[in-house]
Length: 288
Image (tube, rainbow, N blue to C red; front, side, top):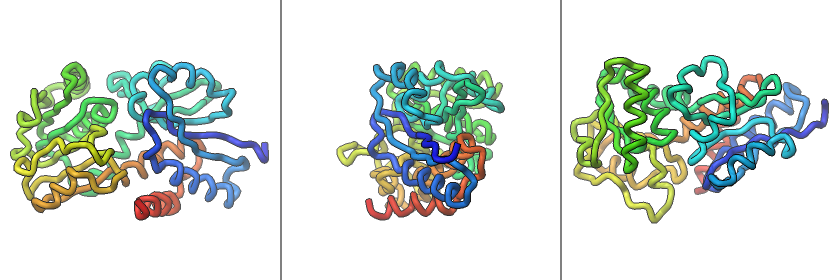
């Protein structure tokens, strides 16, 4: 009904760094001004500790929450709370979601990270037949690995301090893409980055000023494309080093936009206003 207030948001720990509210609230204002929606909507940040996740998810209705994005460290655990959305059969193997919405009285999960990442990566470099090194085997690492394999890259080497997470991704990729060349690295050095075409950071390392760069300058080369999923700060220590050696770089801001647009459309059933949402994101980064 007219005048209804709907809450959307992001759950994670931490989430204070997120720029998603600016993007989504700009989109909601645009749709409301054009009378494409007849309710007020607001996107908020919900910092939820892992031990509090179940209680939070079970209280969504009383909080008047209609949809959520899910980020570190909840992308995998939140899967048990939802049914899988249409065209999301791969999520049974990936076991990581980033978007939930209530449809027909059922909470439904999606992963818009995969198409969002793929779209932005291909704007910069086509992974086809490329050798790729990936740092991080969490929920984001899973989405990235799936997207890279699905794009018919030549090979993936992946490193994470948690060897079980790497093992799970390799098993997942082998199950979905039979015969694909994906291997674990026991150390960052074993990623053999000098031999790679693409390096992707799918870890949260680099978000804080005190974080030490995981990659040394000598590992990088000018023909490497370095993609850091982190977007705030807009230039991490990794990207600064990559630029120093002449490598092409990108941060995750456009991925955030593209996955956010897809989440927005899942929640509202309306076309996301790309320019308005991108302008909102860009203005936030420019003042950092």
